[in-house]
Amino acid sequence: MCIRDSFHSALPLNRISLLTEKSLPIVTVAVNELISEDYIIDEGLAPSSGGRRASLYLLNRRKEKFIVAIAVDQMLSRFVVYDLGRNIVIPQKSIEIRVSSDPQSLEKLIFFIRESIADSGLSPDKILGIGIGMPGFVNIETGTNYSIFPTPDGTNLRDYLSCQLDLPVFIDNDSSLIALAELKHGKAKGKQDAMVINIGWGTGLGMIINGKIFRGHSGFAGEFSHIPLSQSNNLCSCGKRGCLEVETSLLVMATKAKNELNTGSESSLRWLLQDESKHPADHFLEAARSGDPLAVSILSESSFHLGKGIATLIHMMNPETIIMSGRGAIAGKILLPSIQQAINEFCIPRIADLTTIEISEIANDAELLGAANLVVEHSEFT
Image 1 (cartoon, helix red, strand yellow):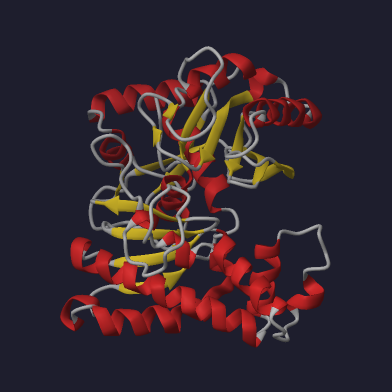
Image 2: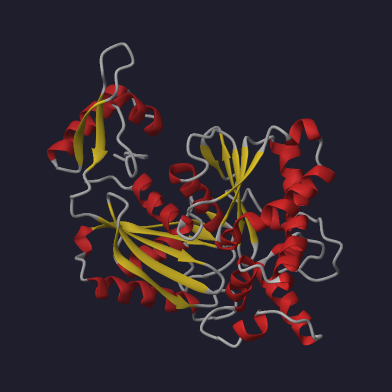
């Protein structure tokens, strides 16, 4: 039985019943079984609220079970292993895999995961499963990614990976997993309605509605980057023109910075970009955080376009909060003034005033944390 949320906090039986959508008697029996198997421990009594104090239960952090979390983006794939207490037990490893252009990308990913697990020294029977976040049109129910990683035998990607890795595998869209991490551990915790912007190589969106991740009818909700708000004639990665992504992705920002340098603009990026061990977009973010005028100017321009998209979200969804997360969120508060300017210009004040804009505090690890939670939510602990 899945004890959702216990990955990070102690819960009473009635809360577990609510989260798992199982009856209290079923939950009670299951929890007692898991206690006998040492998966769950009794954490004592909840604070008094005037009545009988409820017992609290938590996943046993000392239980030797582990979760492999993989974060795949268009350029880089990262690997980390968590224990049941959300502690990192195997340090993060990464490999450059260009998933959209490399025909061997799936084979490289499988080899990377296999090799990383072998190097960890963990016995496969100690691993609950592998959670993988990835870009593209991912249907979590069918285990299919319709955008990348076609399988050689035509089976769905989740089952193919499970077969190749000989472990349970769960996949989901990267932006949905970032939203899941924010819901469980970040700025969206306790929120019922929140939008999580994934600022990365593209511009993604994870949606939290009624306290749950919303994926839409076919699992593809949240294609924020393809809202036609750009006046540019540049082609988007989807093949269309006018998409928000052509103004707001980190790749676009880094390219604009390079073009400015080529026309003679002065910037710390001129020497930062000589270091080829990091992607130009990472150098761009570093320069912006350091106050480099060129980087800040380009970031502010992109943030204004992002704010136009956010104004659309506010009008449509009326969220309690919008959280800036993902790789680009490390730019921090530099993002906010231009976003707020666009909201002031394009959004009805009475509606906009009801939504807060926040910067994630777990942006660097959000996708990996979301991938780990995906495993916890789907594991049976048997």
